[in-house]
Image (cartoon, rainbow, N blue to C red; front, side):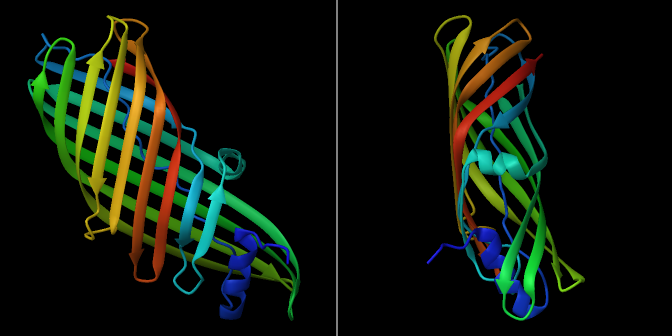
Length: 268
């Protein structure tokens, strides 16, 4: 039997409910890119990093309460094909040994498909618009600091908001259905930095969150190699993994994202 795609299964799930269409929540989650200098002799520092995450998406999602939970398996090219808009921004600040980190993620996708041969209605055309917003705020303390290396202990929270709007056209009629859900995850983590040469450094970061307060559990890990282009600009390239398991009130967002990250930092 030919395997149905994610879009076709969701259309079939929504038709008996006289609501609409296919569902897929394409999430590219947030990734914190590193500082590229310890600034050991400076009492304060600020770094702003717009970045990109070249990630695929796998797992399970159900953005509509009355629709079935669906398996997702998408490569980066699949995600890019449906992408309408995306923005990623990380801000990091330090004063003495106190640190502050924030990360903003916005992704907007649209997926369309025509399914023929459906019972009673014949053909159906479905379009699903999905918007993901995530904001992370963490504060912390630098437990180790030298000219060559540093280690920060962090704690904070992440806010997630997922909105999905589906449009289903069958037999000359179009129906619309929209749902959204959001949650807050507490987070704890560590961030380590090590400088090899005046221009080259590495950064590792790991976070654990959720604890059944928002999601059941979430974790992320990032490793980057950084190169200073000048006093104020640097490049960061590496790899990022993000896993989140949210299941509440009929909504499911249990996904894993992983892939290369690339950022350009401005620091002061």
